[in-house]
Image (cartoon, rainbow, N blue to C red; front, side, top):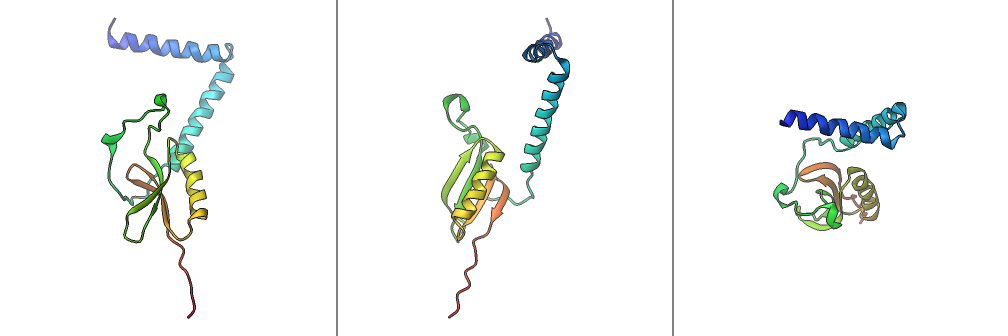
Length: 136
């Protein structure tokens, strides 16, 4: 059997598995698949970079995986000092949405630190430190 035929057999098996999951109800299966596509599109929108990069590209250091109870992603929330050094990794997670929640919590917790939400070297969100206005 050639690779195209194997791929088609695998695709048919996946279709059968989805239909079985929804007791043969094609409308319910399609609705669930469309919902999954919408969720993936939202995640993609949240993961859009605006071109600002910071830090090192570490694509070759991804040795963790969820199967071992570790995070297989480089979504991180980090606090930085005034010299541009990471002083704390506040969160390291596998999902942009979880990372966004951790980022929102971190900027409330650390208002005087620069905080970033990054996926590898792409900065997804960045909060500048609060400027103190002291009168003297």
